[in-house]
Image 1: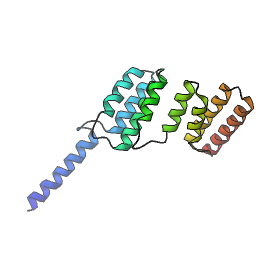
Image 2: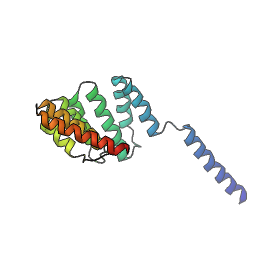
Image 3: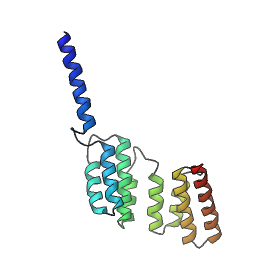
Image 4: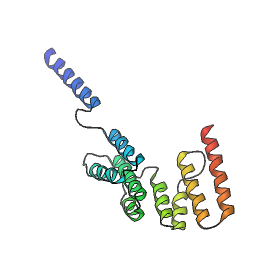
Length: 168
């Protein structure tokens, strides 16, 4: 009996050790980190291929799938294809990460669909969160594109106030 219990504990320990060492494959966050490195180096095609493979994995949770899909939409947008980015974003139904509306706003802004970009940015709230600051920058660029300069200045002031709030 003691032998079986010891063997069971040994097996559990071995499995945990293998999982932490990545023996059974990279974990989701590590894969995203590697893909974000490709995006930072502007290697969008490589990132897109890796994200498509990642999104095809059955073992992803809805939250992980949503996060990967938003990152894939970002890669397509940054590669010059805002239409494909919006198509991917429209397909996310189960779990939308907090960056979902920011990415929608950026894609609409790229297409010069200013009302849609402003609506997406408006979904992010206000204040000193990183998401609210990003939404404020989208709003500022929308107002600049619409040649509503006073609104642009006011939006920039809100962004600066949000940054100050975030940093304090």
